[in-house]
Image 1 (cartoon, one colour):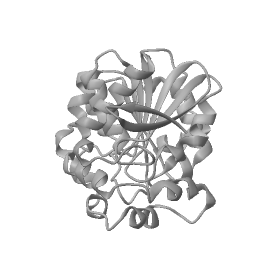
Image 2 (cartoon, rainbow, N blue to C red):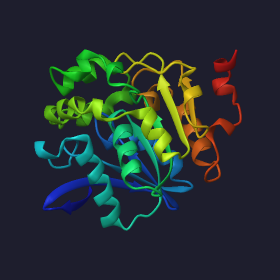
Image 3 (tube, rainbow, N blue to C red):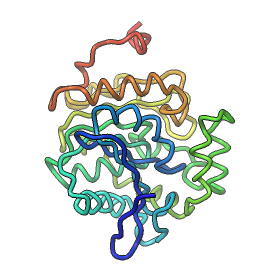
Length: 263
């Protein structure tokens, strides 16, 4: 296990590969662990970091640090301590919102973002997600019994439920369309069309977004596209990370994996 200390509090992370840095940020259910297949995919060309946010996995539990702003500050301090410069970010749910706030607060630091099942509006999040009975309740609701879900279940019990509730109470502070226009960097949104926890944006949502923003749905996925459609997700992620800096994700070459979108 790799970790750093921030104000005498443990921040757990793992790292694979060599090259330009890509940061993986987990969602409200689980920890860094379910990113392992995606990290292994990008590690061929990139240096992949995945960390546990405050209250999750093996990072310190401290309710005072669970707001979205403080989670974004955690990312800022982590990068500073590790000496990491410009980054790409892959963020899932909570991790996506944290990435957006970080990018807004640190102009020029984020080269591109892949946002996975991120709520566009606070009302897009189901009530059961906002006030869960327990982290285990969420895993039973959102995950199949397929072995691919084991990494999520393994660390879900380590989650401080307050880390979910406090961040959910902050949802109204994140105006996703306004932030995307403000930061104006390449950003690809993807969403499991069968996600019961977070409603997907409509296909015409991106028409109001900057040209550097694009949306591609994954029709066979629930809340965890990186597990539900592992190969398709990893192909999409690799194609996006492989674009030239500043190139719009709308320029992604149409692949057989997502041709259904335009039929």
